Image 1 (cartoon, rainbow, N blue to C red):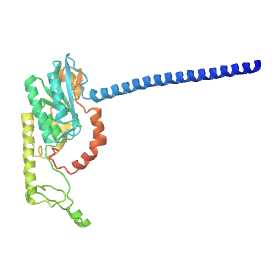
Image 2 (tube, one colour):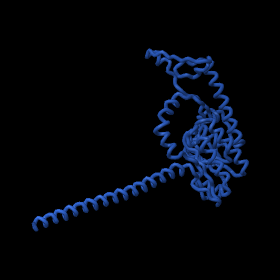
Image 3 (cartoon, rainbow, N blue to C red):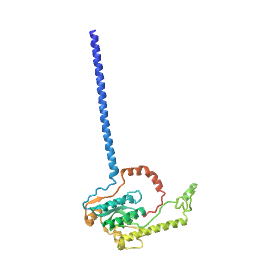
Image 4 (spheres, rainbow, N blue to C red):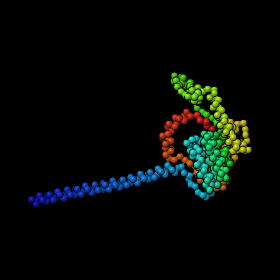
Length: 318
């Protein structure tokens, strides 16, 4: 009997220890799970905060000090609607730069092959308005290229500075596209285009181009070209040394452009800030697309947008 009682006591003691161990293991597991949930929540909060910072930080100027400085706005890449070199992005940057009391002058840092005459016109008009309003000089500094619509904008500056090897000019307008009429015939494909309005199919790449449509397009191009020439002449004035080729769409090196009066002198962003503006400190006011916009552009809208743009025939100052 005594042995049996001892055995039962040992069994009860073992079961108790086993239960305690299980309970302690469960408590430790719950504590670990709770700690992991806290850590995971903190990580998500940090990630969310970093994402918010990335979304909005790119669209803001680097800084806006009141101390004397040279304000800079970059115009780079294609000048087009929704691009970083569009009026939507450039105009607010111009206003911020010119309104800052510490900005001694505005420098347009240009590296662009051109683009939309409408966007260039909007930016140019705003430069003239802000310069008259704030009584501050505006300078253009050309890096590799200031062609077509980019030169359209540069001509609004008080002075244009270039590198001797920069590409400058291309004062002309074009509409480009493709014609696939013969290709469709060879492939045995019938083009079915229904329109309400006899000219609604104007410049359709799959339809024959009539002489009347060609002449209408040419008239439009010549009118926009005349507007471009007038802007350049107004901006450059007597500095231009006009030649028969100046407004033909040709472009020149920076060295040639200085000789022709299309540019004023050689210089870089740093040298203009230091030697011309006399305010060596540079502040970048350029607006940029934020992370979300870049992501949508690349992975979402870009796919459909690319197909649409392939068939667009809007005039381009190039």
